[in-house]
Image 1 (cartoon, rainbow, N blue to C red):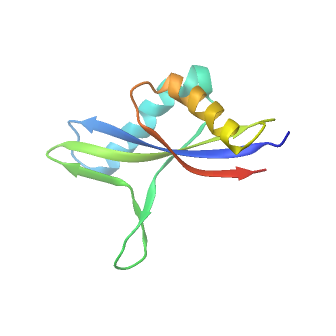
Image 2 (cartoon, rainbow, N blue to C red):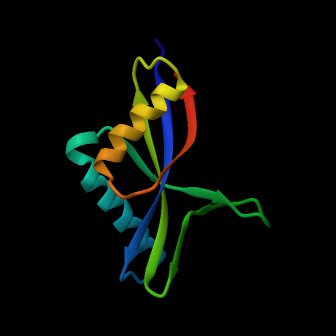
Length: 112
């Protein structure tokens, strides 16, 4: 049975924040705290998106009225899964238990 790297994206809302850098730091910190005891092996990064005009990579965060929406990328290695779908279910289960009420979407699955 192969191993997989599952990449999920999530949306994180931060209130009472002034700058985008603060919002990103707070989102990563809060996600890390919630994942730490149960799933400390999950890699947390800022989500990136491509600008449609200049094709440069941009942070996936926006601040409006002191409220931020930050896109995070969560990566997890899943060992000995039966298939890609099985690996996704395992990753969503582990991460979803720690990050209740946080939307998760599959971004990528790679066989290792």
